[in-house]
Amino acid sequence: MLGTLLTGFIGGVCAWFLTDYVAKPVRRFFDLRRQVNRCLLYCDNVQPRAEWSPIGRVSTKISPEDDAKLTRAQNALMKLGGEMRAFANGDRLANQVVRALGCDADKIAGALVAYSNQISTSGELRLTAHRRLQKLLRLRGDRLAPRLAPMESETRRTAPHVANLPDLLGRKD
Image 1 (cartoon, one colour):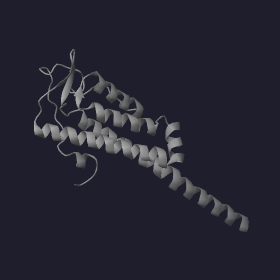
Image 2: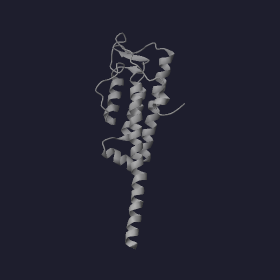
Image 3: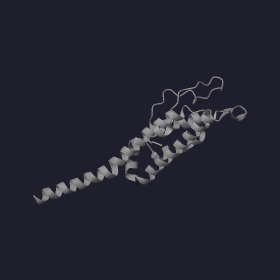
Image 4: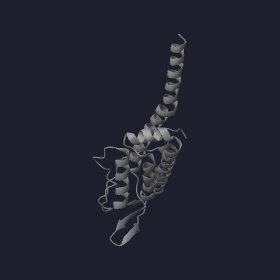
């Protein structure tokens, strides 16, 4: 009877350990991955401040509202990159489980920061940064938003965009 009690106690401690130190952080990673995916949808539809041309980077005129949306998108990507880096460095055991599932949180964090730096300029660098993020997150990216593909400014189509980024990220500001 004492052996059964001891076995049950040890099993309970192991289950608690696995739940608290592995399952919850892994779940947190997938929640964070979902937030990044929603943020990417928002970022796909922001107007860039500049575009690449054969002569180099050329500034474009955008409205103050579009400029504010672009700034919010850059800040959101940086914040999510910081959260992903904190996960990679803080929850080491869970990060190993996530790596075994095919995602590298540290690389994703770097890609988020890189994309936040590229989002203000349309062209190949922005598109490459976006595709790298999709690949690292293992997201399907069959169709890109019109503003992501490198196009001439005359043919750029306007896509509907999310009005409130804090709501998109699950916060009420």
